[in-house]
Image (cartoon, rainbow, N blue to C red; front, side, top):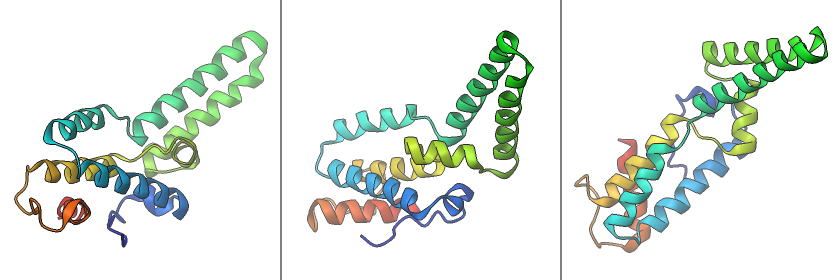
Length: 157
């Protein structure tokens, strides 16, 4: 499938390595293709799962906060130099909050494959299109692959 994900305005995607973006896009494609062969209740169950998926901002906040707290706790026990760890974590979280990306976000995204809210929403809209929430998806014309492609295109518009 040609590059269907046109979310280039997503600052995280534009700063992430192409391989990471490609891996995430391929995972979405596989899922949508699989769901194109499923019944409506199965698609609805998976959509519920996507509603609970953590996005990159939430993951960065939790990871950064945990590292900052660990630095403070270690500084209390073993000396003040551990405070540097907390300061670095807080600085990385500040950078992510101000710019929308940073080394901490890249690390979380590369290691965990954590997606941005925009990427999660793209998959949700494609699945809603498959489920029949939109009218532009063919019911049986062209088979599951054609339905999956049409759903991904509909999610972009």
